[in-house]
Image (cartoon, rainbow, N blue to C red):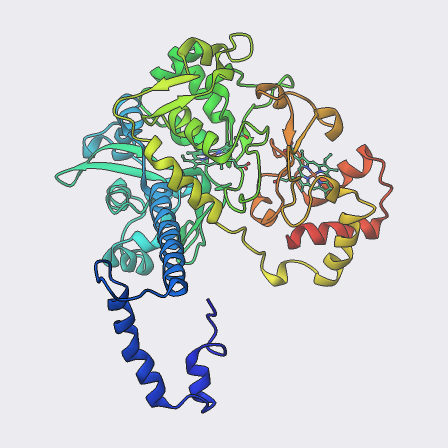
Length: 465
Ligand code: HEC
Ligand code: HEC
């Protein structure tokens, strides 16, 4: 269907080729045509071409409506659905009690908004009640009182944290996908602004947030260590990091003694990409079911017999994470829309003044030529169409994280929107703190012999993605 006005009937009127009365006549004819096509109107001949066109339009319109609905639903789920995880975070860990503080019926001093922002939690300004937004803007509300945190939670404005309330009282807390995979644009102040879904929250100290919980019993029982030891592990992760395999294999540290957590990845620009996570566990919908059931502790169904291996995934095998069934299932019916939404989020473009455009254009040639980057990071997806998996030897890095995954390999990371991942470093564990460090690594490992200029141009190209 031509959409532009140039091709449409109005364009013709503008040019004076179709008199107004004729258009009016067409408008009158339309209902007549519809009536003529109504089923059961015997004896009125149908124009098969018109009928075919209507069937086609009806079919396409249904697909369009379905797409729009999935997108809308998926966005809601990504932002606000806790999949029943409040039974875990609120019920078992009692995390909300630490947020409330003793004065509001919880335990300890409570969590002030200032502290919450320091831990990297974000506030969605769009969800703030007008009065609270103005008070924050004017500085007339205290960011040093846990009461304010509770007001923010009640307004569902703390990104990724879903409060359960009864008669206005916060009685529990669950988490949503947005916790780790969204941030805000800081438009009001640092940590408060408009939501940016899909951006990894590299400020968020997930471990410290979880470590606030009065009880860590479910973790200590599964891992077979004390709650204090669990707290130590959680505190070792640091901002922008999380370990999505710890409760399967129990490996809290790498052989070099450093934390086994990975940096939070982007959840945008994923359409067209076959495998997900740094080690390619599966498709987006595989991983969503994995995370919702085994990490967020929501209630659903998850099947992945690769986890039944007692050698590689002793904790998963013992706890039965390879075959989870819950009734009611609060996850499976949401996976389609959730999948669709993630595939719909485009990778953001970096600000134009954040890189040197001329150097980036030269860097593109290095990326596609002498640097050999495009052999794996195939533009415009920046990942191989197919099975984009590589051995640690190919990459010139250790096998620790690869070995914690079914295929013992690393997946080529799609590079679009790379600038959102500068903080916390590049590669699965953030081992390369700068663009320069990544380029130097490839230059050495793959014997590229890039000149200083070529390296600089390549870096500018990476910044432009
Ligand atoms: C507690 C933090 C956290 C939460 C909550 C979380 N994720 Fe993740 N997510 C991660 C980490 C860490 C990884 C990388 C895991 C790895 O590579 O082993 C990841 C990986 C992903 C990936 C793979 C991206 C890629 O291609 O590399 C997708 C997609 C994703 N998460 C979507 C979701 C969705 C949808 C939800 C909600 C159902 C969710 N995540 C909840 C931390 C989180
Ligand atoms: C053999 C395939 C291959 C080649 C060639 C390759 N890469 Fe990669 N790249 C990968 C894989 C796999 C990863 C993920 C590694 C990890 O997370 O540990 C990756 C990760 C990256 C990252 C980090 C992304 C992030 O979000 O952490 C950057 C940046 C990058 N590559 C740039 C380049 C550049 C520049 C070149 C050329 C000089 C290049 N790559 C060549 C496979 C390749």
